[in-house]
Image (spheres, rainbow, N blue to C red):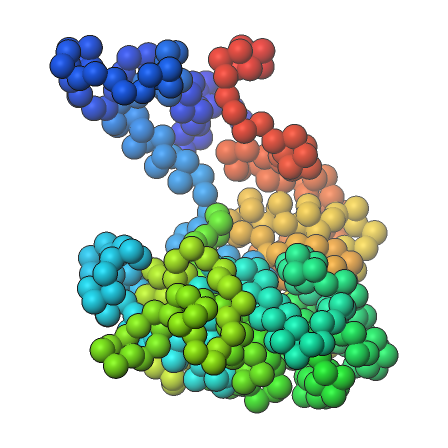
Length: 503
Ligand SMILES: *Cc1c(COP(=O)(O)O)cnc(C)c1O
């Protein structure tokens, strides 16, 4: 049903900000520059001659525009966000309060070192606890995201191998890996080779051993992996790689499943990034900011990138130049300054407020919740691998066979029921993947409601209601968008001519 306005109850249809333009309208009252006769322009030819092209708007118009847009967004603060591989958990408000303290939020990386001793101490303390939780001796704090951490880890591995005169060319990556893994290895100049998965959804150890050789720089393994399974032959894997002189990179994006239970350092891992915005509770989505510190083994510690904090004789110091690095041989730096400091503040607030018992409880509850979904849904959906799972549960589209409903249609129907869809079509090792990660912060009532919806939709699909699924979503401000077209031909600018042509 359509309304005269296009609005749906109190959800208002929102025009582009340029379409709301009232020329000359402004939210500020500045003196007219023409009246400032004693000011001589120093811009010369660079002075703008045409209007700047920004829309004229009042302050209430601007506020309403962005508020309405934000209301069209789904967020973890609004409801269950079971996006597998993303660890969309609740972010305690305490962390936000800490990150906004003026002494932490308003400092500048170029301030004199004596005035930011507390900030160095905070980086050092965060580094300390991350090393304790992972059982690793060293850490690079500056990478800005998981993928950036992967690149950092591989560059560290490359530096260590080159230092021993053993530049190698291949990096092995399991089939189920996140796309950033092969991309990072490729960016670092390596030739990427895929390792197949077993019927049980884990790395095929025999196939891995076959591919090993003295030209393999590293393997990149995700543990728990993207099928939500613990790689239970990880120690055999790391031993085999080390015997060949290679190093082991672990994608630690799924660390939320094992915090306080498994220390990657005990498994033979040489480098692993931590997504502070996943495991250590920083709000994420929409592109950041995140942080991807990389923990390093003894073999790699000396090659960690600049800058890093050390305990000097007059307090904390920041090593920023290779010539100040003593016996270390940093390969360079990943970032202009010290990394995403605000995200480190949140991670430290989270770790200290949870305590070691709380962190262990969180990972246990995350695993329990995923297994609860598996137990409640396995008779009606098709679980890809036998349980139990870790922090996320993987289903494939066999339960939709002969229904004419696809994983995508199913996900769109979930939106009409008020649930953000799970991750779809990833990992690629199963057909039509549905990857659900409930996280530890969801209670039983929410999970039961979710289970009820999924079961009802699955039954509906299996009883021949495909047309309903093809039409979904019907209650959203926009329905099915042509996402391929949007990705291939994005329209990122607005002009009055375009708008006129579209009408
Ligand atoms: C999220 C994720 C990454 C990438 O991390 P970003 O912080 O998004 O760059 C890599 N691997 C896995 C398994 C992930 O889930």
